[in-house]
Amino acid sequence: MHKLKFIYIGSFLFALFVIQDVFELRWEALYELQEEQMYRRWSGLGVLLVILFQWTLSLVRSVPRWEDKSIVFHKIHNWLGAFTPLIFYVHSMELGFAYLLVLSITFFSNFIMGMFNFDVIRSKSQLFFQGWMIVHVSLSVFITSLTFYHIWVVFFYE
Image 1 (tube, helix red, strand yellow):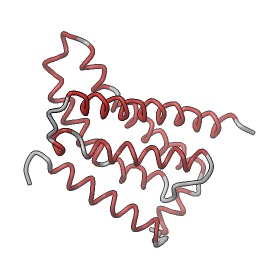
Image 2: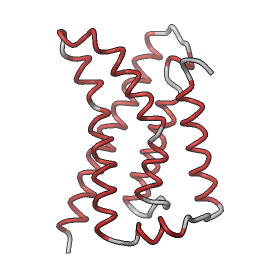
Image 3: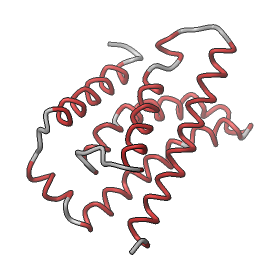
Image 4: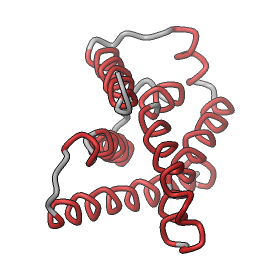
C-alpha cells in the first residue's frame, strides 16, 4: 500500500455500505439514532461540512498565490473523499427514495469517479482529463445544490 491507500480504504468502506444496504444489515443503536430528527440534523450538518470542504480544493487551485498548497489540499480531498461512505452511513443507512435516492446515487457515483482519478487511471490524454474533470465537478455542483434543497425541505417544508 502506497500513495493510493485511500483508494483501498474508500473501496472497502463503499463495499461495506453496499453490503449493508443490499442485505439490510442494520446497526440497531445507530439506526434508532437516525430515526431522531435532532440526530439527523446534526449528522446532516456533518455531511454538509464535508461536501463544502471538498470545494476548498477548487478554491485553492483557482487562487494563484495558494497554488503551492494545491498538492496538500489534493491529498486531503482524496482522503476525505475516501471516508465519505462512512460519513454517509453515519447520517443514513438507507439511500432514500425520490429526490433523496437521486442525491444518494449521484453522491456515490461521484465518490466512485473520485476514487478512480488520474492517480489510478494514469491517462496522459488531455481530453480524458478535461472530460473527467467536467463530469466530476458537474456532479459536485448537482450534489451541493440538491443538498441545499434537502436542507430546505428538512427545515422549511411543512
